Length: 296
Image 1 (cartoon, rainbow, N blue to C red):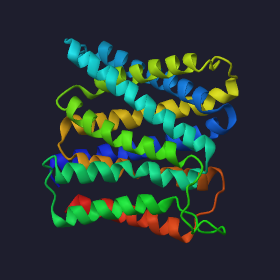
Image 2 (cartoon, rainbow, N blue to C red):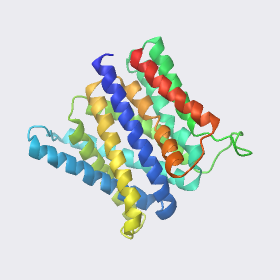
Image 3 (spheres, rainbow, N blue to C red):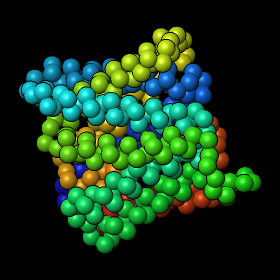
Image 4 (cartoon, rainbow, N blue to C red):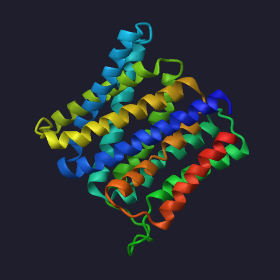
């Protein structure tokens, strides 16, 4: 396995575990305190965690942090922060309206869009075996959250929250392709921290404009939101590291897009939700796809 592929695999797995864990804790918070409060507080905690990591490296490795020195870079960080806040806002609104089991695979489809565009138009080369592995991982991600155990779920219909989540998926694909180009060659920690900080500021501004009192929250509500922030910090550090160190954007995007795996497993372990046959098959196919990709 070459270094570029190893970096892409590790970055993708970091994004998958981070975002999958974040979705698990975010859904609990959204159902309890609403989408806007969850959006703001989760990202405040995430920013504080990334800031702590940034300051620790400043103390122990002063030459490690690389802050932008030009206006164009700062504008880029602000743009990607605002765009990603809109992605989360649309996704959270959709999750608030509808069932996560139906909407989650739609949101995960952004990774397939990224992989397709990067292979077809952005010059990313992939062998036939690697393409098969990416397809296996992507299809497994879409199938993972489908539930055919209830009557009527076999029919395709416009589910509540679907328009918001579909828009979030499309914008997430745009963000991912743009962030890959922006962060390439830059310091991943500094870039992730500053972009995430801009995203948090944008969320606070949104809450103010919508007149949501996000400051009214009790200590018990903060626990899962802190875990959302921690999980997202891990995810953004992982993918920013991957995008800045390798050109295999499709690999990073598709593996990180399989975030339903940790979400479903956490629900099984802690919420006692049962895994159906399709979900077990999907998890096995995703793991098989990662293994195939590692040896392709």
